[in-house]
Length: 489
Ligand SMILES: [Zn+2]
Image (tube, rainbow, N blue to C red; front, top):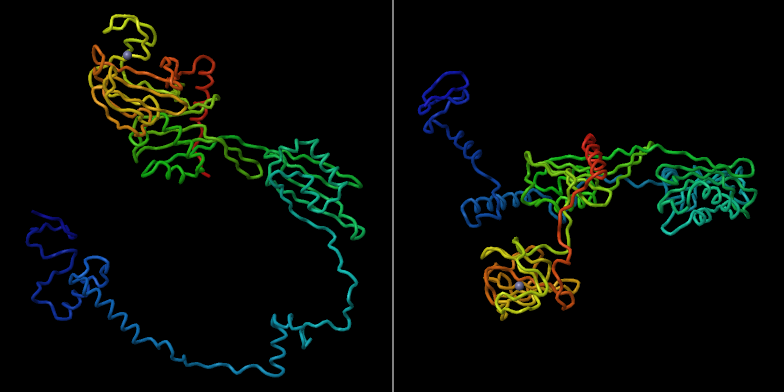
């Protein structure tokens, strides 16, 4: 075996005496001082005292800790010993009075020296404090509040309030002004203290894209509208999924609400736990409004995407509020799912009974499927009955919300127990031919408030597809959403 060392020389690995240019000295030639150095360097002086309690390392660690504590105590001055030092002599006489006059204390004591702060005879008392010529204040519109109330609380007179509100309501519906809006109010000089100050100016953001300002001109008020330009380019955020899709999406800057709808949209179309690995990338695009004045407002999620290798999931929210795949296809989650993947061999209604040989009401649906095919709960529910039931053979009955019950007969094996909660799609048993049956099939019954109904009349999960103009518009929207450059905020 040969190794290449720093000097570029090949040496036999087994007998190497050089390493990084430093000589390795045989142990016998070490001086006692070197041995101590090596011992100090090799020893872990602060082992974890919570681990391996009682081992030699632990005892050594405990001894080190105790020794350090003792050393600390030995070097400390002790708890009751005085610290030796100089205390300056207290100020007295003139020095004390002058120092006191410059401190804050004398304000409370009445400034008894008067040397630096007391009023002289040149100062004459006023009969009343003068008023500020203008008062500038910020008032906030509360929940369920009106602009008129806000102005009156700010001290605007009834007349001014009325005319201000009349002018504002001419420019915008008063209900459009959001609670929390700040109104900058400027009040002017008044002739005397018995009357309200006149409203000099009022400025506020009436809408995200509109600011209004009122200003006094002569005796009346004038209103000015300031339209604010809004950029409505959606915001696209991208990132690596990593350990947690939720956390990575949050870290990209999306709000919890957006991330929640992002995950909800994806979860309805793919199995996130199975199909989205740490190496996958996610894309989420949300509505965004950026005002020319700098404010940014975020809207709903518009696009949700995950790319794992060459498998892409791209979901776009369409005008009907549904999430469609970029192809224009979506799955409608109906109330029920089909319990078994199979073909319907006999529907609901009057029929000639195959075993009894006479006309009889068939109160369910027969689905033919091979022996042992799993049977899934059609709806979330509680197992009301699970066991042998005469003609039904091995039978399971589920009670679900809305007075709906579902029954599953002729099972070869039951996979649930009475009282158990099952969710839609969960396996509750397997296809068989127990009870009054001619071959492996599922007899499926649905009750609404105790009365048998045709399962066909229930709403099932289904896939639907946009078409025509809607599909063209949808595709244009997808292309637009995909063309947005990723941004950060
Ligand atoms: Zn049947």
